[in-house]
Image (cartoon, rainbow, N blue to C red; front, side, top):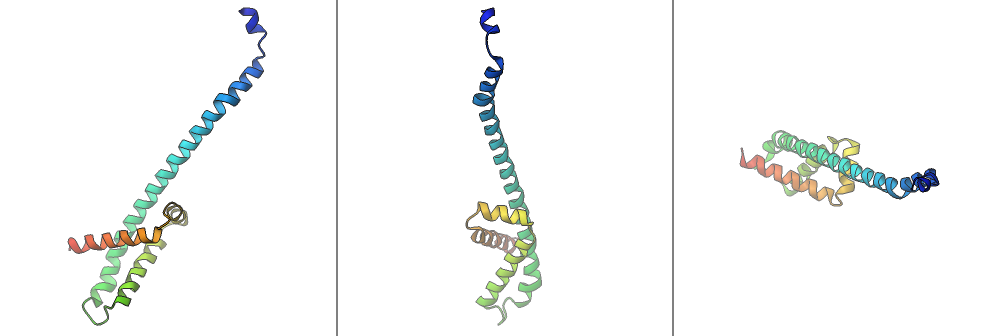
Length: 128
């Protein structure tokens, strides 16, 4: 047994262990860490966007909507214009990195953002 261990080419054994076992394990671990970091970033930017939308909806409601709602100026076109203002302000409040990450992860980002704005507007109406 002792002679067999002395005759083993340890450099080759370590190389095989490194190549067959350690490198795949390290690649797998790196992939999982990257996925976790991406998920954390998505969560962080999603929360930032939701908080921004809440502020923007309140601001647009107070600065634009309250003045013209119930008047002749409150038309479907004006409603769409106000919605676009809210969308643009919400997007502009994000960093480029956050916007790129969220649009990459959400193929329907615009519809998703629109639904968040509608939900915040509904909440604002309910608690007013």
